[in-house]
Amino acid sequence: MEVLPSARRLIGSLRDIGYDLSGAVADLVDNSIAAGSTFIRIDMSFEGSNSWIRVSDDGSGMSEGALVEALRFGTRRHYDLDDLGKFGLGLKAASLSQCKRLTVASRSTAQGRTRLARWDIDHIEATDRWEVIRPRARDCRLATVPLRGAVGTVVLWEKLDRILRFKSPSGRRALTEFGQLETEIEDHLAMIFHRFLAREARRRLPLDILINGRPIQPWDPFARRETETRALTEQKLALTDGGASHRVAVRPYVLPAESRFSTPKAHHIAGGPRRWNRQQGFYFYRNDRMIQGGGWNRLRTSDEHTKLARISVDFLPSADHLFELNVSKTQVRVPPELRAELTAIASSVARIAQGSYRGKSEGHQGTDLTVARIEAVRELVGLVINAVRVALTEEFGPRSIELQNISKRISRLEQRLVKDMTQIAKAKATHNGNGAVTASGRATNPSS
Image 1: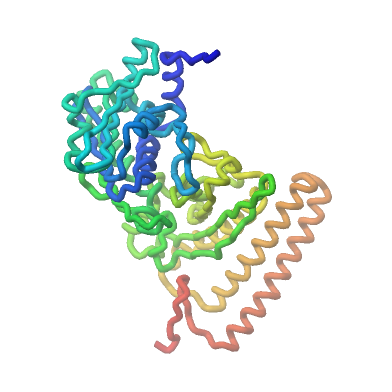
Image 2 (image 1 turned 90 degrees about the vertical axis):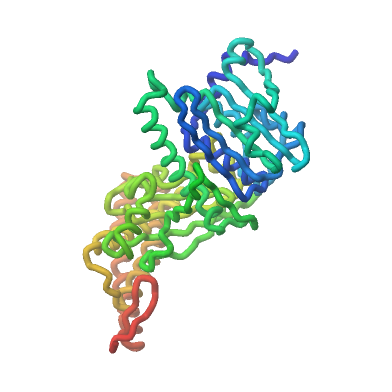
């Protein structure tokens, strides 16, 4: 016997699945990218209680069957490993978390007809039925106009009850906040899809996203155009599950202190949408789409002195279940098997970031070649020592006497290793001559 859930009751719960506005729009962009879009347009119009948001693309469009399936909660479609989607809820759950009326229009051939389908929460609550409405094109001009003579898909949000939460939705406060939301969406998409916008994603097609006619510029979390940003060695971590092996790529960066940025504007931009302290930490990517932008995932705490540390972590959809990717694709959990290694890496990068932070007032002077080599040596030793500390902590417990005794011996060993390897670096530098080198690795002539 088939027992269907109450549409009236369940639809209210699905609206609270965990999306904010920017994350919901990002989920729609995921669908457009999956459809092969190269041009995505986001339009937001403030018209009081009749305000609307529209996302249109030039992707492949949908057939009748595909459109109906796209409106199904928990779609039956199969997701390939290179897809950005996963749960089959994004279009519906993301949209209805922000609005009460979702209309989708799509055309798969330039000469074909435009197909429309709609979820309307007021209708669901009135009928208690999972009924998709099929409106006429002449009654949905906002959804159909972008598809005139074109192939693609349009997603239209109306009845924006979760966005315009004001007693007077036509008032000045509502208008001001609506404008602020536009900026928040722009900043969020610039971060989440920066690899696609900068033509750095593995997919071959380019991507441009416009919001109210304005092109969104990619935001690089790692400020790689700054000559004094330090890109540390990439590491490949192994993650196993049931005989299957997954590779996780980790690339740490240490950004320059404020005084070492090329311009004050560049430093401000590098601070990111959430500003410096909240942007430090891990940046998790799945198929080049950022899932999480900043935060240490409980492996360490954020600190003013480590705000220059940012670490990219790439994993494939085949490891989704190990990272416990949530439905809104905004959060992951570090698999237990990787916690020790990522903790060691984070600690080492934080230590280097602290050094860069303390040197923030030294100006843009070059660093001696010997100093650069010593920093590299300390980085290497720190990685090894921290990994050993983490492993011992898990073995003996954080407060055991055995760990305290071994930690003292490790500290002495670390000091000896750094001292010995520093002497080697100095001797080698003396033998090769004392040129100067910037943090970007470019040598200068000491006689110039």
